[in-house]
Image (tube, rainbow, N blue to C red; front, side, top):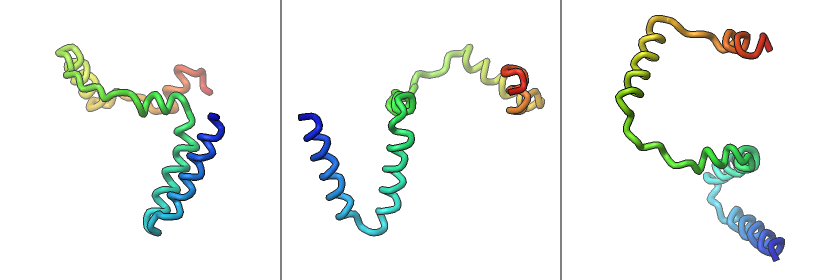
Length: 91
C-alpha cells in the first residue's frame, strides 16, 4: 500500500508540473534538484527543521562575542589552510 501511495504522489507531482507557468519552471527545477541533493541528507533535514534559537543572549555570551569581535579587529585570525594544518596535520 505504501508503494501505491508513493506512485500516486509522484503522478500528482507530474501533473502539477504540467500546469506550472513557464516562468516558474526554472524555480521548480532548482527546488526539486535541491530536494534530491540536499533534502535527502538526514543531517540537512534536521538542520532545516530545527527551531530558530530565539533565546536572548546571556551577559556571558555577549561578552564572549565582544571579545571575539575585538580579536578579529586586531587581526588575530587564522586562515582556513592554517586551521587545517593545526588540527588535521596538514591534510
